[in-house]
Image (cartoon, rainbow, N blue to C red; front, side, top):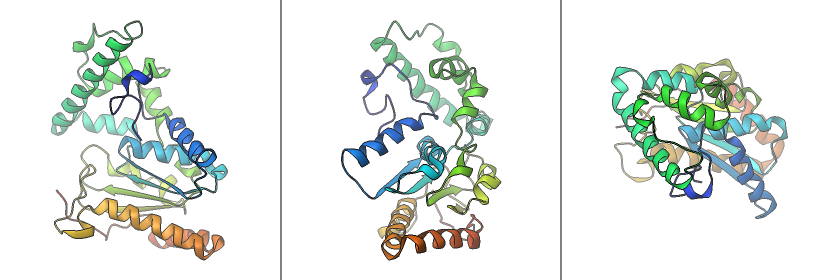
Length: 263
């Protein structure tokens, strides 16, 4: 699924994407159920997409449809404020420059498509990601300011409500997503959430030195997780729920011993 404006879709909507548009994912979920009659659906998201799938699951809470069998999130930016602070650190200057380059180009394309809605007059005056969110993301998205935007869009504040089997994969050396975000009791104490915390991996860089199925390590974990959930569902719906709870308690939501060497 492309976020709004991604993949050459800028002309399809006058809006910009942000980390809080979990309603887009819910619309996809509802369409897959109601129009396509899918009965076994998993959502997997990376980085900002990981925040969005977790936010959707948390907002659905106990009302999540039975067709939604699981959620997977890789290096999710569940605390946008903490991520913005991390990106602003000097050692992350290449990340911030890259994001700002992409955002400026996006706004230029949107201004050409919707000149009555967007202006690029002050574009060169915005230097950092937090400044961008204050000047562009917040007003376009209907937030009071950057701080309000970060709070409203954060999955961290709603993950306690997740009631579907959920896998989070995070690296302890992620330069732009502080690992402390995943030690929050809302995650650790939720029996529906399992967290695999690798020592290495950076930001979504879980590439093993070994060939074969494990080469793309995070993707293999996602596939394994989905297969396990489907197998448990076939065995017994009740058994599936008990297994999820038992696994999470034993794991205490963090599996730091299961590491992968990555670049």
